[in-house]
Image (cartoon, one colour):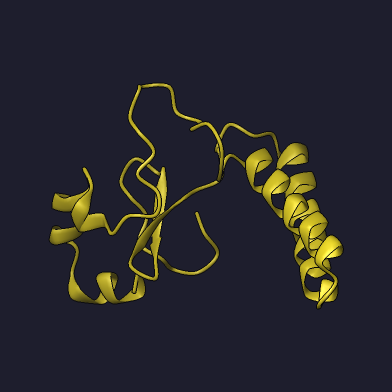
Amino acid sequence: MPQKDYPQTPDGRYFVSRARLWRCTDPSLGDTERRAAIKALMKARRAVQLAGDDAEAMVEALAGVDAAKRALGERGPVWWHDGAPDEGGYHPKNTSYADWWAALDEAAQMRGT
């Protein structure tokens, strides 16, 4: 589950933030692997901040963010195996989660906006 109290889809694949579905971390990752990927992600995000106007450093830092997100299962091939498509990036009302989203109370929906 994401750190903040964002609404999470019943199947645990996504959470909703800024009115969009965002893929959750692969729950099958071992603790050591997950921690290492999170550490790499934080390091890469710091590198993005430090890159400033250095285009080469920025490209390298963003590649590090992407690699860490892929290691966590938040980007790249989906981590589930039932053939369901990746619906990340869409408003929940425009996905297969529309009924779930509509059934949430207003407070829960507001946490996702």
